[in-house]
Length: 315
Image (cartoon, rainbow, N blue to C red):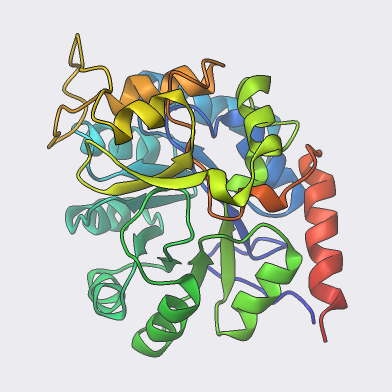
């Protein structure tokens, strides 16, 4: 089986693989640039940043790569519009957005000719996105890491969305190798988005303790927890998660009002930042459902080489 050509607006990546834009500084310029250099679409996770920090990351990614670079911004955050505007002013190649649905963002993208790709979990919302002007949609299933918008599997969602729209459909959720990519392509996806696999790359800048937790994980360690965002989230079991499940999680001491709506049960920004910087027992370690299937930290180029070989080995 050969990988198809993915076309998003005028963008034609060598491979139909988008690296998921993981929030709170998990997906930064070094990772996004490495993915772009390997022939995919590299994505900077903007959520948790100020506009000037995002500008600096985009410029650094551009310095490291001439490939396709995108930005992912959660609609649920208070500075959503400022981050999107900053990315557009930096002439970012595309913008992905999830955790809510913005109609305004399509107009902003149209002003600059920038493709907008919403993350959706139903055929109905995908059709709405297409009418609004989406260049493509990410069809994300329940196997995904981080915040979850559905309990349905990616296989079910891809098939439904493929029938609902004519724009490219990007499958996301639980895809960690070329065999998973091939399965999604057979179901009608035009490409895939992979996040968890790229955490275990040399170019991902999270702390070694974060990566070690991924490498040591077992299927039973992966749990779904409550997030202040108002959506469930998938993470690895640790001391913080145990406290959360028992209702003993630390309450926010200094709220930064980062979300449009927040339960205030704990600070999601602080929980994610702690894990990213190595305090993995005191923070939230987001991951995809199939994280335990990944056994090695590899250079991004080697990850791509193996994915392509595995896809091509499928009859």
